[in-house]
Length: 187
Image (tube, rainbow, N blue to C red):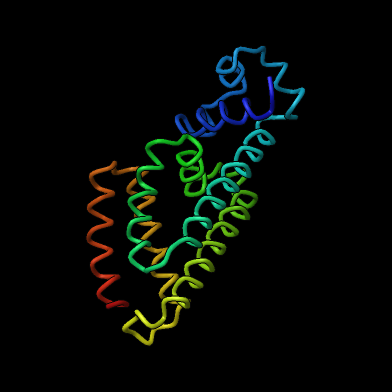
């Protein structure tokens, strides 16, 4: 049994049941090993959780940055919101990352938030760079930084709907938010 399999199983359980209800015994059962075998790879549940967090954050961030880098127009940010909602439904790593970034275990909150702020700051910077590349399409004198922060606010709202509202509400949130955002900043 590899560390990778353990992290994936743990992500699934943490995303589904939350940190508190996802026991090391459940992780062991999910991968078909004895609980004691997990300790060969991870000292405790916190270490397993943080390793899963780091992996999920790195995967989600790499994916997002690659997507933003390929964008040629601001409208691609709209498509990305829809794609993120689809990704949330399809990938356990995405569900785990979003849930734990919004509601981390209280005793690990400071450590998780280091990952969260790195993730958010990196995305904000990438969106800001896209806006700078597309400056001629903007109809406002609002700074690229503020526009990028506004976009991340829309992303945050969509993430909350992904967790609590479901696909229909996510789509409604995207449509309403994007109309206002686009009208405010671009032709």
